[in-house]
Length: 204
Image 1: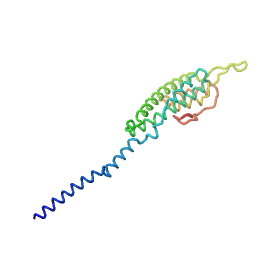
Image 2 (image 1 turned 90 degrees about the vertical axis):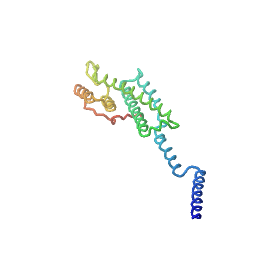
Image 3 (image 1 turned 180 degrees about the vertical axis):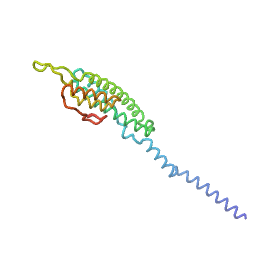
Image 4 (image 1 turned 30 degrees about the vertical axis):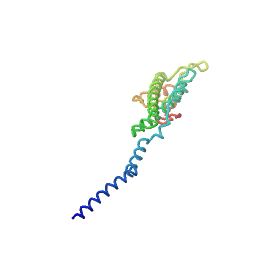
């Protein structure tokens, strides 16, 4: 009986010793795996949005509003800037929504600053483009002197206006496009259609 008690005591001491020795070697495999997985999760998506910025769009937007810009060129520029701002802002927002820990990584402050900047420019350019499109659609046809005659002509290429409307995708887009339809009929011009996908411009 004494032998059994002694054996049990030795076994318990061995188990305790083994436990101590094991911890002395550092973290367990499970602990290391959990830490590595957590690190990967916190930085997931950082490579996709870590370098995204919108400060260049601010410069392009300022140039687009220059007084020397022709109406068609200004409309194309605003449409492209709007599409680029929308794409970048959406990409950052989606990445942060999927992984909020992005804002707490080494690049977190830069990502948050870029997110705020892109959101701000997106909202400002959208407002500017929307106002400009409505200004144009309120007077799509102008009078022009050709020879000895005064004729009614398109104020600018209607396709550019349709592209801007498609990019903006406002609730009253059908009304705006209807104004273009009426203007085309008025001057006997062929019906135009958007050449760019909604929300997409040439510039990125």
